[in-house]
Structures are given as structure tokens and as C-alpha cells.
Image (cartoon, rainbow over all chains, first blue to last red; front, side, top):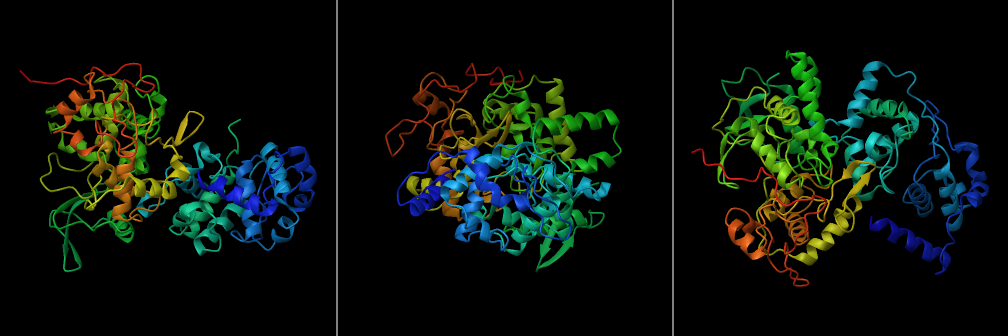
Length: 213
Length: 337
């Protein structure tokens, strides 16, 4: 995990002129997160919007992962017209606080799998747990961890995420419009996935529990 | 479903030998994917076999009890950590090295063991069967103590191997496409410094700055590639050419053949310059152990040599990692007398 801390430190130094950030504070984060709640909701559950721009669940995601995404929006490494005005309201301290706040919330349920049929869910499960090596599509869990509930700061939990969000992100990686993953690890897989497979894995993951409990 | 045929490449036209019943779309799909990813196409007269999947198992006409045992073998193969503290004393799963559930060409597919053994094996200088070969992985790669020969777990693992070999004739005479971890040509010079830099850039995001990998709960997400939680000094992958072949063909995950040959070899060399649990063949003295194992094995690793950066003699220690003993009973000669 060498790169992430260096990156964050560099961003932090640039923004704070050498002053270290105070420790992330979830209580302060709750106040700063007021700007996030119109879309991501007070409980961090986000919203699945079929056919529209789904807003991801943030509750229970890894704090360092959330923080990196916010910094990436600010720096332009990840782009979203919807997010841009809001991240610009957050300085480095607020980003750290907001990330701590959402990371501390209990994970909510993923939505968007309700209309998926059995065959779609079965294919999604296969991709998530075993992959499809005939196309060199490795399983999701080989990076996103046991039951796809996340692994470390780099690989977010994707079980229990909204299907609409997972689908649009995989499509973005496939099209090259999202590429803030480390070493193209996600992009190289997404580019080998068919649209049907993207829909299937999104539906399956949305139907799964975000946490082990 | 039999996906084995003789593969003949002729002037860019793919022809199938008369012995093959029909072209198999699934096999062709794998070959197309592999060649698009920069792997070589099968050579004339190579044996190409793409093993059946677990989905195929459900549809196979086998006794339900056999299917249950093969599923058990698959489960052990992909989550070998369930044997932690009993047979496994590090963070490895079988599938940590044998990618794609042991099915993939160029990732040391495991089915060849089911059709080429019993056979003489240079590493231990006697004839090994499938169980003894699997025991070798437990002894070295898992830094462990193999399940007993004939035990439920050993039988389940063997059954999984044989299921993957379904349809292949015993003792094939043709060379096997994608067997082992074929190493690229060794470059003229290997560099520790370049290997370290390439590791930091390409590998550390998953395997950590100190090769420690990543665990979540009792599961290994990314295996440790050196240190106490990795394979011991007797595992095949400590040989620099084997590690280089693994890296070139399989890493970073999802991006095979993306590193240059030089990078793959430099990273492998850097890895072989790090410490790990003692070789179970250790005699109590690293020089003596090296002498006894050099010709068959350690001439390809850095074991017993002084590391160029600090002079540390690699493998000169009594550390067996989490394993509370040095040598399992499985490490023994056979004479058949």
C-alpha cells in the first residue's frame, strides 16, 4: 500500500502548506456531510435509480477509500459533474472527517436486484465468486475480498452496493471514462466484460449483504 | 464434456487432428482469449486440454457422492486456509499460485499431475504418485504437514485433480500446452535494485511493501510472497526461473504478459533475496543443506548465498515460521525394495 499514503500526504501538504491534518473526527464529519445528504442520504444509503445516475451507498465503506475518491474528484483523476460542486466545498480536513463519518455508519442494503431473474443472478454469482476464465475475467472476490465485502484501503466493499451504481462504474471503466484505479486493475477486467455480464454481476452484488454480521 | 484434442497450427490455418471428434468451441474460446493476452498459441502437436468447470460437474454423469467429494476437493483447493494449524502453517491457498482454480494454462495447471504420475521426480529422486506430489505442495509451498495419504482430505484433493484431467489419456506423449509456469528467456543481468523498484511499482499495492500480502479475517486475499506467512525455502517458486515464469504469465492479476521479461526476472530475483521459513530438508547447517540440495534444486534459488545489499546469508536460520516443527514425515526417501 505504498502509493496511497504518499499520494494523500502529497495532496495534504500541497493544500495545508505543510501543516498536518487533525485526526479525522466522525462527529465533525457528520456536520460537514450535510452537503452530501441530498443524494447520499442521512444514513449513507445513497439511492438506486434505474436508468438514471445512481448514488452509491457510502455507509460502512472504508474511510481511506472514501477519502481517496473525494481527493480524486478534486484533482480531476475521477470525474463527475454531480460531485464536483460538492467536493469543492470540502477541504482536506473535511474530507477526512466526512470519510470517517460514513465509514462509521452501519451498512444499508443494496438495491436494484429485485427484477433480476434466476439465471442472471446465477451468472452474477459465478463472476463474483469464481470469475470466467474463458475470458480471463477474474472473480470480484480475488481483490474485493471474502464475500466481496472489501479488502484494505484500496479495494472497496461491493457486496450490498446498488446495482445501478456498480453497473455505471463498470461501464465507465470499460469505456475508459473512469480510470482512477491502481494500475488499471479494474479497468483491465471491465474491458473484458460483456454488458450482460456487467448487469449480472451488478444485480448479484446488490443482492448480497455488505457486512459479515 | 471432453475438451482435449491435438492442436495443429499450419500456415495460420487451424486444423484439428483426425482423432478429435469435433472442434470444441469452449477450448477455442480459451485459446482466443489467451492469445489475445499475449500467450503463445498451441504449437503443432501440443496436447491442449481445458479442464471442465464446477458448472460442468453439476451436469456430469457421475455418482452424486463422487460429485460431493470433488466439490470438497475444490473447496480445499480454493480455500486451503481451512486447514490452517493442521496442514497449513502460512497464508497460502493452493489457488494462490495455481490461478483459475488450477485450470489455467501457464499457471501451473494441476491436471497434468493426474495423468503423468506415478513418475520419477528429480526433486526427491524417487517415483511419486499424485498424493505424494500433492504432499510436496503442503510440505513446501504451504509450509505444512500434508494430509495423511488416503485420508478424506487427500482423497478429495486427488479427486479434484483427476476431475480436471477428465478425458485425457494416461501418460500422454505429447508436450502439454501451458504446463507449469513457462519462464521467459533469462536476461543477461538481473538487478536487485531494479527488482525492488518494479516490485514497489507493480506488486506492492496488493502484496504489501514487505511482501506480507493481505488477510481479511481468516481469509487470504493476497498471499504473502516472502516472510513467515509465505512458502518456505523448499517450494518450487523460490527458484528464480519459476517465479519469473509465474510473474510474467500471471501478474499483475488480470494483466498477464504486461511486464517485460527483464522486469519479471528482476522481481523474481528480488523476491528470492528475501527471507522465508527454513527448507524442511535443512540439516542444521545452511552450507551443508545447500550442498545436498544444490544440484537438484537450490542452484536456481538464492538459498545459502549472501545477499548483495547487506551480506545476509539467506536461509541461515532455524525459523520455521508458524509451523512448530521442521520436517514432516512425508519428506522421506522411497526405495521400493
